[in-house]
Image (cartoon, rainbow, N blue to C red; front, side, top):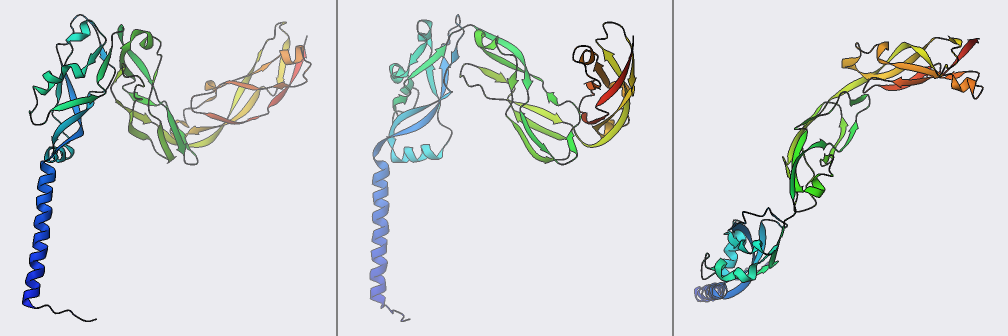
Length: 315
């Protein structure tokens, strides 16, 4: 590849050329950024002259988009600086109306901000407020979850939620109808140990409802499960004629899964099995199906032996 050799004069000319280009670009940028533009900036709203005799709640967020007039430099710095100068809105008109028109307050708002950076419009221009009767209630938290456990692992005890209640405020008609407040869904896969985590409570869909706290702590006890088999007695129900009934056998074997930490404490007294004599008296069954009507929490029945038992009726 040939190498181009420039003379001293040619190098000087190229240097002067690029210097002129750079100076021209800088001059253009200075002129461009010194010109006046209209641009959008987010403004935080502060209120003054709040009505003392009326309870109200804003139906929009505490930030609003403002159309601002300023130089290119101001527009550049506004986009870089996320902390915008707040604006003050006078709520005196709420004594007669449920809304505030910001355009009517532009002179007062602009009087509190730099003159070379005035606001010329708002989006939206009108702020609306709710004046319905408000209630404050403590409502139980309802955990929503989608947890997938590893094989032989599962939830081994009641979920602990702290705090178990949230304080909800809003229109009385809506608050009084609430029974629980849901959380965001707690999702986890291949779980093999106790879960301790923070979960957000569901954000209100309406702007006139507030919830506190925003985050709760959740503990989901998880343990390894194993099978256990015990024998439990079978009771007879609906023996309305007081027959002398003998069941064969009088006990059934129940196999169930339970967590390892509760294995030793699970005994037959925690279960209850029964047969219904109505199956024989009304429908002529020759054997009676066994039903387990009481099972300890977090225990899962695997099988019952036998599922149906014979009986002898002595009249």
